[in-house]
Length: 202
Image (cartoon, rainbow, N blue to C red; front, top):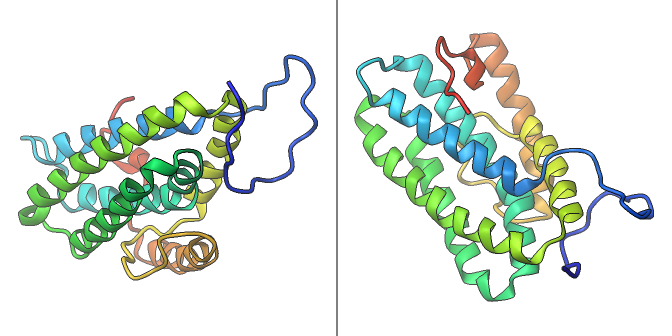
């Protein structure tokens, strides 16, 4: 499988025979997170819903997830699969709409958000499947490392007005994320799946 023109990444050592970078590949990470988000939505709409705590975690998890995808996954798809550029644009627009729907999320708005998340999983999932066919395992792993770093620095609240494409989102999103994390600490707001009494299983 030949290398594809992916966005710039940190320098990597010259590959030796059998070399494989450490970490998880971006396709596996995204698919796992999609599964967790769908499971969390099922929990929030089921008889054992966790109320405001669950809504706060869903908002934070989706905000981080969408931010990191826009910084690394979607640009990689655009570079590796030029024919999918319009679908990438559509996903970025859909992300902004989803973030708008997350603002002040209530139980009443959860049905709409759940439908938007399911459309996101289907749309991005198909792009991930295609990316797997053209990217090398090393490229997918290096992208996975960048995605995980981006998620840790990403906002935990919806900011649909921030840039949705590099390079500006890679500059603005971490700065916004710092402010969000300060607010989270002050208000003791739960933001991770592990903060829930019953976190979604993998």
